Amino acid sequence: MLPAVREQAGLGHGQLGTALLFIGAGALPAMLLTGPAVDRFGHRVTAVLQVALGCTGVIVALTGHGFVGLVTGLVALGAVSGAADVANNAAAASAERASGRRPVIARAHGVFSAGVVGASLVSGVLRGAGAAVAVPFLLAAAVGAAAGILTWAGARTDDRVRAGVRPPAAGSPPRRFFGTLRPLPLLVVGGLAALAFAVENAHQSWSAEYLDDVLSAGPAVAAAGPAVFAAVVAVARFAVAGLSAGHPLAVLIIGAAAAAAGTVVVAAAPTVAVALTGVGLAAAGTAVLYPTLLALAVLRVDESAKGTATSVVATIAYLGFLAGPVYVGYWAAVAGLPGAMVAVAAVAAGLALLTWPALRAVSAVRRRRAGSGRRARTPPGRCAGSCRR
Image (cartoon, helix red, strand yellow):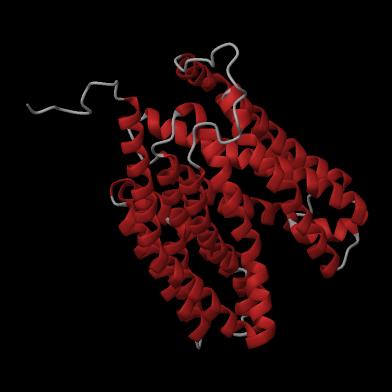
């Protein structure tokens, strides 16, 4: 709906690009603060944010007249969408733990990608039929309201889990932002996720432009780039969900390598068909990266701190999401769009090379700290573990 929003606001392309930056300005602080709120108040926060997200979209559509009005609405939209992203991922992490490590996070991200495809098609049909700008957002608000009601009802289970968490003793020091969490593993995994998101959003944001400018595909065919990317992401997330839970390291390395190979195919493609094949391969590779990394990050996190852990990883990853399109734009100015795609492939290849040593270092830190924690809890005069005479 961006073209219709831009026309309603009376903005040029440059002004729209500037206005869209304010989504990130609203999202980043909200993402960082939402996790602790979910840990404190439970998934009723998630339900409220799901309803609020739909309502904020309607507000942007109704009040987005002129640059100031649109920017104000986009800041609010960024804040609520970033907060809802963290809350939804925290809910998926809680559900994955409660279900015995079924791949709930990966499947939730598959539903999201399928929703992108479906919502884009419905919005396109409505725009082609001459519907008002607010109509697709009203439909999204109805879906958000339904999701919020279901989540509110399901939050009773969350309350029972939280009831088993011992409250802090009276007079205990106030809980810090990280609480009992070890920040280093979250920061490392978040950095890997930022690289994954940079590659993903580079394709999502620039594939249509690449097909149009480099291969002269025309607007209608060029629009197939983002559509193919989102559709393949949805299918791949559902298809590989089970493998992500059982073999996360292999999935991450193969996924990053596939993303690098697909991006190279795009950069060297002589025809639109070959380029779309590369887009599909890159989509299949990037699809598995963020859900797998997020599941690894929160795997051993206590239920009372899952929201905070999700906030840290998601906020760092979102920085990569924002940087990806800018990175492509910079390299396109220096080396053209094919050269920019090669630069994106280099990021994906770097992720494939960094994943194993980075996660191994995180595991080593966790083992050392777990070992020191067990030794510290051993009463004086007793052995840790089994004693031999």
